[in-house]
Amino acid sequence: MVLNIAARIKEYARTLGFTAAAIVPARPGEHSRYYAEWIAAGYHAEMGYLARPDAIARRADLSRTVPNAQSVVVVAANYHTRHLPPEILNDPSRGIIAGYAWNLDYHDLLTPKLRQLQAWIAAQMDVPVNGRAYTDTGPVLERELAARGGLGFIGKNTCLISPALGSYLFLGEIILDVPLPFDNPSPRGTCGKCTRCLDACPTDALIAPYRLNSNLCISYLTIELKGEIPPDLRPKIGNRIFGCDICQEVCPYNRRFAIPTDEPAFHAALDRMAPPLLDLIALDDERFRKRFKGSPIKRTKRRGLLRNVAVALGNWGSPQAIPALEKAIHDPEPLIRTHAEWALAQIRK
Image 1: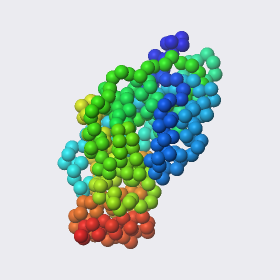
Image 2: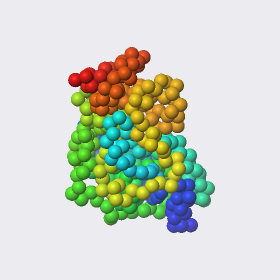
Image 3: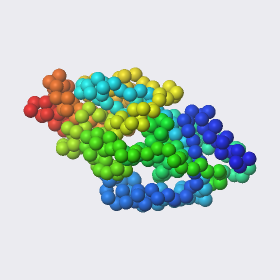
Image 4: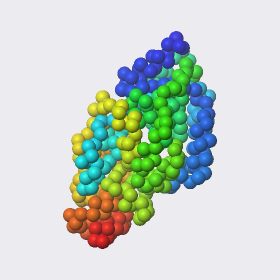
């Protein structure tokens, strides 16, 4: 029964729509030390929630989250739908959105499935089962756990990379207080001598292999940063208006092995992937809420997204953007106004 339960858990996870699953021990790993060093170096930027002492401690010891934690079920969900063609990626009049945010917020899709999987596991056991489920929402070093279970390896771009699928994967975890049979790391997969991700990063956020400085990362600058984007970094952002996939787009594993997901909730029309910038800069609060209802983009709020759009318009440099930017410099939001003023100055140089 105990040996068989591991196979049954992974099979049930697949029936729920997860691409892969693994089971690993809930013991501390070496990445908790790396994480503490990363925080001490200030690479978490203004994401203060990552540096709270309790958050650091809970990442190092999962029993602080689930008493007597013994096992972790780790799941991966493929969200890749398509590679944007170069003529779209390189069209400066469009804003490029990271692939994970093209449609439904993954939290809304995956969290109920994780809880369903947790309930199913509890129903199969002969003893009471306690646990917690997370998908990018709790203090868990999820990439290390996934690699520990053989779901992939951690690449030089700090993403988990599956040798069979690439890195366009959401991860989720269920921490449990019961013992289960464990999977082992896979011997497959390595970045080797490849440094394409480091070479391609426009802001040099990948300061070394496996080391990301969030202060420079376009994903951080366009999503997590709440205030003004540093002026010296604005030209390097190009037309990325929500997140950044550059270090994944150039990865050979993604270019060769990424396959479209079967999950229809992750598929989207072109205007959800790379919308015209002039359409976005004209959004008022009501239209913003309507357009991005259920989308991860709502996280930035209107002021954050239009801040990013103004930067992209300045980088486009087209006189076509002047009327819209002239209107934006009178926006009620100071954050939008200051970045629209910068964009106008860029165009009028």
